[in-house]
Length: 132
Image (cartoon, rainbow, N blue to C red; front, top):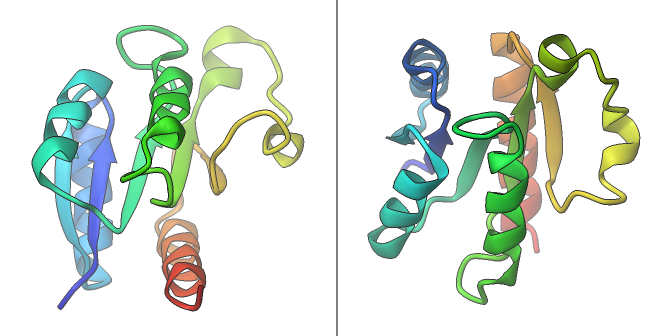
């Protein structure tokens, strides 16, 4: 059975690109255009990993969503890869290498996402999860 990835991004083009990349690696995808839509999906679906944009309806929506996710006993162990272009959009640097100290995500990738990097990171996190 293939692993399922929830892709959460308000940009339909990015969602579609991520879905194509992930499908080419053998993953099944579910998509949501907002954190609110993702919450609805999570009521009935249990993805193996979440690919999450930072800036959607608000500039910090992804941050709020992941904090909520980590408080939910049923969902808190799902690996999360956060996608961001926040530096380009706001001009504020976000030191991704240090962000894990205050953001409960498993990995960060900068947009535009490199297909090989995305596939490698997803495979790594799913492998780590299955070995726990």
